[in-house]
Length: 352
Image (cartoon, rainbow, N blue to C red; front, side, top):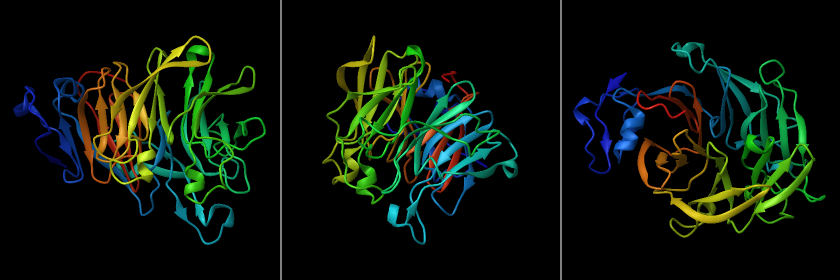
């Protein structure tokens, strides 16, 4: 492990001389403080540690922490022959013992994805369960699937919704649970599956949906996106943030790389759509909100953090960028960097 000084993108009157982060690979991952708010969050002695280094892009989406394990989905991986997905697959793993100081005890345990076909985003669901988006294939429907007991029965899943008025979804991307209105599930459905050869041509626009498990009903809550991707509620479930990653399919700067904010009205409605932030590099993919209202998102330069006013206050610079990440107790953040899994420990103001 090495200790190095912070990288500063802009001058800020924090105590740089006292800042002593521990970095296992400083050339690949480091802190970038822009404002004192971020300095207060990361603290004086944070660390960034590489805890898994794979030969395949196993650490891409989800990043859901539950009972000492981190649940992650991979990026697309080539397989010998699968015409239904243009010879591609996506793997799902439970990474166990991720909080351990003994890196040798951290293990990747594969999970069965025969029902959750090509999984992507995930979230906690219920007291001890998970919910995952399934992109589907050219022969299998996608949708929302729960894994009620991921520790005891990780290969048992239950479908919640697999179509919209009989039409197949495009390729569900991410999901967030609103516990304030009874546990409704809000999810994005861009057409990446078709663009990447996983699905047939779309039958629906790129939209955001809300599924109500109490009434078994699904409705559109937002449209007008190029490609809606990550989504997250604030702590009061009064604001919903949604990323638009249409810029990933366009020349740099020619498409949206934008985080939008919406007010969550009483009932299944979103109002007051507005631009919250624009990614400083690449596109904003996975997104989460901490207890202080700061918005975190994986972008082309790593992990970016904005305050509730939409001002960029800092980044965790990660070579190769970050698609998604997960919060865990005691100021821990797990960063998904395709073939690499990083563990960040913050020592400042508690925000999780």
